[in-house]
Amino acid sequence: MNSTIRLDKCLTINYGFSRKEAGTIIRKGRVTVNGSVCKDVALKVSPEDFIEFEGGQLDVVTEKTKRYFMIYKPKGCVCSNDDPQNPIVLSLLEESSGLFCVGRLDLDTEGLLLITDDGAWSHRITSPKKSHPKTYEVWLADDCSADAEKLFAEGVLLRGEKTPTRPAVLKILEPRHVLLTITEGRYHQVKRMFAFTGNRVVGLKRLSVGNITLDKDMQPGEYRKLTPEECAEF
Ligand code: URA
Image 1 (cartoon, rainbow, N blue to C red):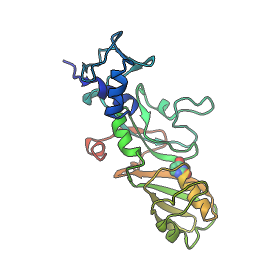
Image 2: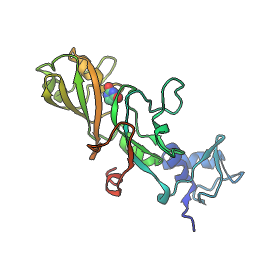
Image 3: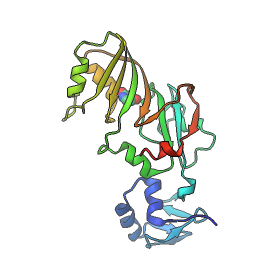
Image 4: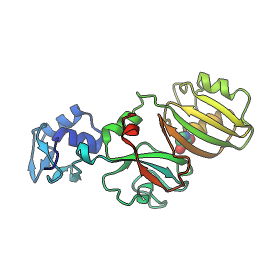
């Protein structure tokens, strides 16, 4: 027998809505189940049901069928689903239906990217309210400035921002090769933090998100399922 989930949870998983938002959408009659409008938020649905919201079909992702991966995102591919110019990271997976990237890495950034079909799990990682550490290996155009460690620990006010960055930890491996751990995900954050110090990032690789670390021997484009322990991290 197939497992089932509530209709509101199905909407939450597919779109990342909160349970409350999903309930409102369903009660307004915007969701159909097997061709008929359904306003019952608690209706149990299974992967055999055909569910539509605003013309799009929803995957019924039950606890048993949720998928979680780490991929070594290569440079030169994008995290979005519709880029006519660049290869899409999801196309590196054998079967990517219903999957999406957890957050974004820039086109020229490589390294750890999490992929799932679990909207709530993804939200717990990317929500600005959370502060999971993310560590990046950074290669710089010039020697890292002497005050960068202190500046980043205190937080810097990036151009166009209203609040300083949260305290970040800088570890200098070599003058132009460093590790930076941040707990937010602002737009181009690492590049902009080094630009603040007058430097330029010439290479960027994400090594970890929370306690999930990119496998040492993994090559660009390779991926694997996360272990239950890694999934339980968030
Ligand atoms: N910071 C950046 O500048 N780019 C990324 O891709 C990730 C973090």
